[in-house]
View 1 (tube, helix red, strand yellow):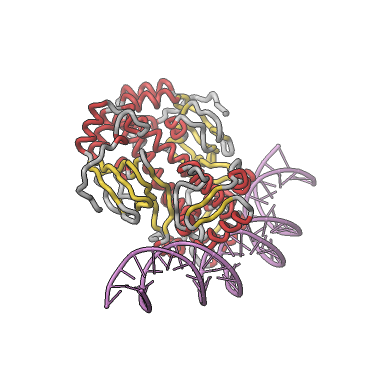
View 2 (cartoon, protein in one colour):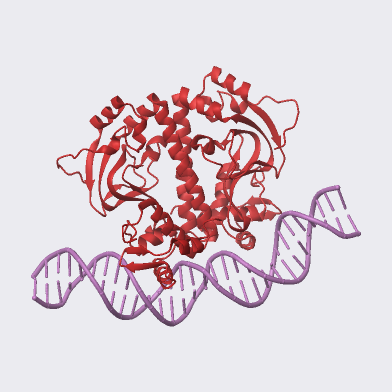
Amino acid sequence: MKQQEVPVPYCDKCAYETGSIFKHLSPEEVDMINFEKEFRQYKRGEILYNEGSRISGFFCIHSGIIKVFKTGLDGKEQIIRFAKSGEIIAYRSVLSNELACTSARVIEDCAVCFIPSEILISLVKSNSTFAHELLKLACHELGEANSFITDIAQKTVRERLAEILLLLVNDFGLDDQNYLQIALTREELANIVGTATESVIRLLSEFKNDGFLELQGRKIKILSTKGLEKISNVFN
Amino acid sequence: MKQQEVPVPYCDKCAYETGSIFKHLSPEEVDMINFEKEFRQYKRGEILYNEGSRISGFFCIHSGIIKVFKTGLDGKEQIIRFAKSGEIIAYRSVLSNELACTSARVIEDCAVCFIPSEILISLVKSNSTFAHELLKLACHELGEANSFITDIAQKTVRERLAEILLLLVNDFGLDDQNYLQIALTREELANIVGTATESVIRLLSEFKNDGFLELQGRKIKILSTKGLEKISNVFN
DNA sequence: CGGTACGTTGAGTCATATCAACCATAGTGG
DNA sequence: CCACTATGGTTGATATGACTCAACGTACCG
């Protein structure tokens, strides 16, 4: 849990005008958060919190990318989701008052605000709109989890990999040269899809041969989302 | 959507003293629910709601068992969860204001209360304890979904089947002869585990040969939860 | 008594995991 | 500056878990 003593830049993600969950708070409530929160910076590879630990607060991502994962058999990671600017993590454990069911590790150097549990709970109690929005968020994630369960259970690795690539395009976008704006190791890709690293490597090079993408190390250049859609069977 | 005109039995599941989510309501709020709710009875095989539809309320189960599932490729069902007495379903869609992401079908004849969406929303707004409890519920389900994702992605069909059997024992219990208190077809078991019907049949008969259970049609007699635990690798 | 849904078994196939070897790259310390 | 090591990526060979297909048995139901 590294916490650097650097000049704290203004964090606009916990402000009430932004697109984050905090937009449903009053200026006074945002002030309270800004007073209580702790600004932190983490480098790639660092852990924000560990599965099984009791969590004393949640994180709002200012910048960077974080992977949220569970550790399964033989320590193999299953990536549950990614969090990027404006999103919050660890709120599940805080709200359900359970131990963390996942761990979180930095994928791209990040700056986050750490906000104590009590703040979240008290806001849920005092601001019903905020509570409703949190419910929407949790219920939406639940819907996504249900879809993912169905996909993993029914689709082939090939279909899932294509689908995950499209999902990453959707979540992180492409730069001006059509490079995917998130760089993952082959192992990380495998740990989303739920397969072996070697399988990801082989399938990626198949997709390359099919002309759907190009590979430059970890950077993936998307040439044909249409092609990937066809492979992934996205429309059931 | 069958709705029988029978004398409405007293439904104690929507009462504020029970173990259901409604225990966090005031007597007045419970009265409101009782006034607005609609009592319905369904037989095995009937559908409560369909994936993709807009839902105008949620269901509280008085008695019986319901399976909640998604329809994937080729119409193959993926069972997401079961709901039994005292539990609520379809609240996800109501709260997230999204189309239903699952369907619900009766496994064991059931009696349910149908409660309009507006009631749920207004209670979330007016009763912050209730909102917090709903958040706990949703977040808890989210944690379970995450575990399930990891299991499906990493465990073998054999391990998953053993684990699901234990989970069913936990949720529905055993009768005095150690028979599992929920009767599923082989296909339904397969649709939880995420495998083919034939695989379930073969594995069940393996478990039988190993002395862990006995089979009487759909009734499964559990002889050794220890054995099933060993197979399932429950402790990671 | 035929029909329909469910259960069972066997045989063959295939996607994917596993194992092993090897290469590329970058960071480290002597 | 150069071995040294660690990490990640790639490829090939092999094994196998699980699916598919097909046939047949069983049981209930009108």
